[in-house]
Amino acid sequence: MGKKGRILLLDDDELIVSMLARHLGKEGYATRILHSSVQAIEKILSWQPDLVLLDINLREQVNGLDLLRELKKEGAEFPIVMLTSDDSREAAIKALRYGAADYQNKPFNIEEIKIAIEQLLDSARLRDEIAYLKQSAANEQNKSFIGKSPAILSLIENARKIAQAGVSSVLITGKSGTGKEVLARQIHHWRF
Image (cartoon, rainbow, N blue to C red; front, side, top):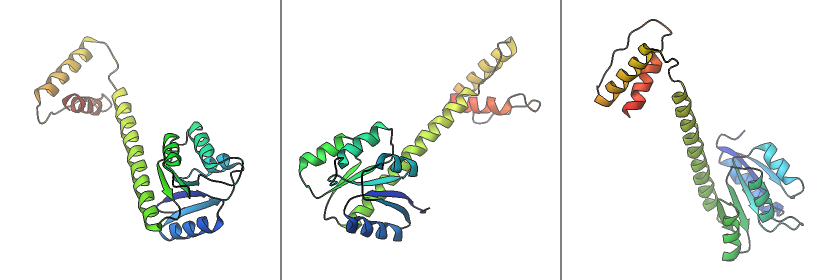
């Protein structure tokens, strides 16, 4: 597996994809090449790439825009960069409207492609990290106190007051397993 990520290339021009794969491999990416749209959706989704480079103008019944739309319908969240020799604005707009992350005209500069890939992968990693952190925070919020006794309700009320007062440090004591850490996290959450 490539250290930098997994990139799938789908283009019926063997020269272009082999050149791209060679350059990306030197950069530390794992690459897989497809030359046909036949069963491309299944192959792409089963390999789980971090990014796809997809030619718009495949010489088959299914073109790149159709594959792009189908991948998005299947829930593909990885960035898809469309490659084309058609430099019309209409094609670019259509690709972006269908969910492409970027659009590169052929012939392209390999350094520009590398920069675009790095930026897209960095953005995807940040998006994944934010989603993970949000989920972790939500899971922590779900670890709340169980109980409705007067003692628990009083404890929660006092903890809220401490948090709202902005006290810089709080000493929580008690036996092991009584929820001291849960209380500390809750105070911290209420404070910030």
